[in-house]
Length: 204
Image (cartoon, rainbow, N blue to C red; front, side, top):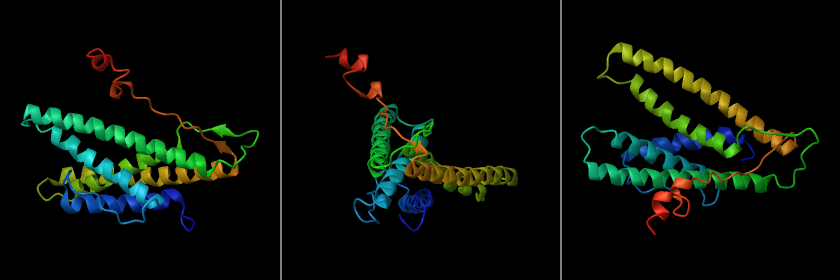
């Protein structure tokens, strides 16, 4: 990712992934592999695919007529997907930490309120919001007022993405220059761990 800045490339990858997902629009579709294994692009693509599938699982589970057993199974699948998403974000942060391991922070260096990968996670979700808001703005079965509201929201989302993209690339440049430093804090979700969720360890 030398020619373009990291977040700019991430947006391109996320947009491609969202388009690819909607070819089948199926939460069980196999994950494509359009980028070289192990590349930054491949990791970002896999990350966004998790987000895209989970987005649609969240849609499905809100069906008021869903079978309760199916809903429970889907909820557990969403929980597993969310943990996978968290794990991947932490791996991305760890890769940034390794990438900038030799950078010595300047005496006045400060830490950011969130790590680069969690900001990139928000960028991934924005790609999905933009796709679906654009879809709402083009609905032929909705009235003009609905489409205009969606267009207004789409404008805001596009501005939000532009601002976040610039902020991420500025943060990475600051880290590389020693003006900022980063730490990797694991999320430590207690409810997913059978050793820390009392409902789970209480059944042993």
